[in-house]
Image (cartoon, rainbow, N blue to C red; front, side, top):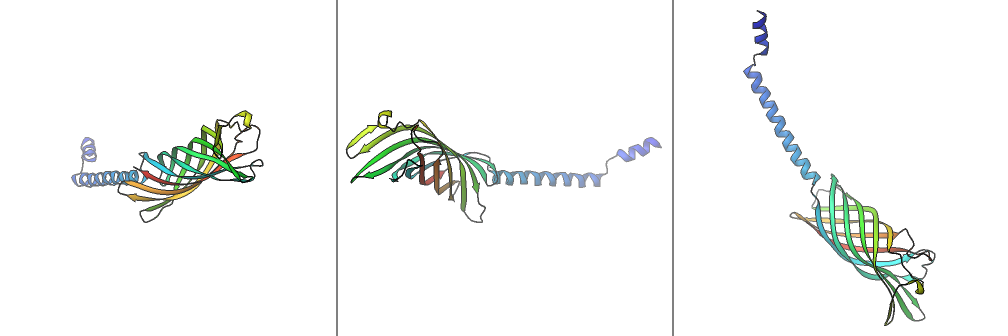
Length: 221
């Protein structure tokens, strides 16, 4: 009797099995579907792109009075890693023409200070119901000097300690900005404005730091 009772307990009921199979199949379907949607929202694969635009650069600090901006080119490559929905990290590698201008006695002298900049930016997307995606970026920007010249009219010379503008090879700055992205198929076009301000003196004997305002156009794929 006992073995028959145990057999009754452990004998599968066909109706129960069919119901359980349906529940399991439904759960798997929902899990796979949710995972697919979540993966699409997360977009875990990195996106790569190109950036190009214009820099309006100058210097700030107690020894940087009376300077005006130098207009130059900025452009390079970009990679965006998605950490969570609407949050990512953007790594850029940019060639940036910076420096400043000084007008004095009817003439203009220009400090042409060019960097390879590597901004590492947190990127926050602003949710919308359209194909236009506003975003904000903020983070440090690491500058590596590749060229420094002083020009006045037709005269040009490399920066050096003798001229008093022996510019350091590294510049640490912070960047903040925002823009909008436009989805075109699987690609994205974007326009953004970004302000970068240096935190370290560009030379060892003057209180002067970099600053620039840039407008970029981007293409990501």
